[in-house]
Length: 263
Image (cartoon, rainbow, N blue to C red; front, top):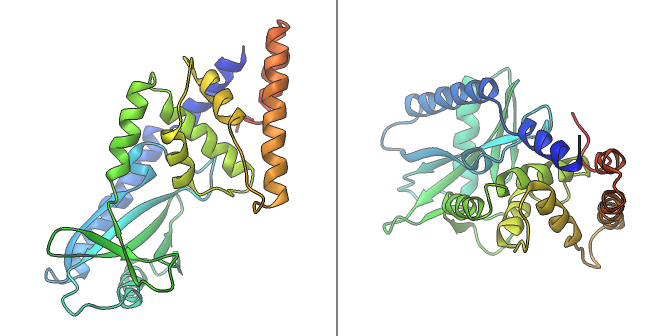
C-alpha cells in the first residue's frame, strides 16, 4: 500500500455506488411525478435536479449524513408572489405526500429528509428572457437573485477532463475532509475553488491532494478552530512527504490517514 493507493481507493469509495444511486433516482422520479400531479399545469414551468448530484460529486450517506439532492421547482408565478409564498406552496406539497418524513424550511429551501437521501427543494421563477431567479439568501434588499443552476457542471467537467480525470475524485476527497472538520466551507465554494485553481506538475490524485492542501488558506475573520484544522492538514501533508522521501511508504500512508481515514 501507499499514499496514492489509499487516496485512490478512498476516492472510489466516496463515489456514489449504483445501488445507492438507484434508490436516489427512484425517489427523484417519485418526487417529479408527484409535483406534476399536485400542481396545476398552469402553475409549474419546469422542475429538475441540479447541484452536486448532477455533477457526480455528491458523497454517499455513509461518508456524509448531510448529503442532499438539490431540486429546483420553477413556478410560472403570474401573480408575482414573493419567495415565502412559493416556499409555502412547496411546504404544503411535501406535507401532503411525505407526512411521516422530516420536513422543515431552511431559507431559501424546503428540506425533505428521507431515510436514504435529503432533498433541498428550491422555488424559482423565470422571466420572459428565460432567466431564472431564486429567493435571495444573503441580501436584505433583494427578494430574488438570478441564477444558472447547471452552468457550473460543464466548467467542472471540462476541468476534470483536462486534469487526467482527477478533479472529481479530488472534490470528493476534499468534501470528505471538510465534512470531517465541521463543514465550515460550503460545498459549492469548495468545488468552485478547486475548479478555479491551477495544478502544476500534478499527475495523480496524491499530487492533486498535496497541491490543494498546501495552498489552503484562511482569513483573520475565520474561526480559530478552522485555522487550527488547516494548519494541522498542512503539517500532516508535510510529514507525509517527509516519510515518502525517506522511503517509508507505510508510515507515510498511516500519516495521510489522519487526514483521510477510511469509513
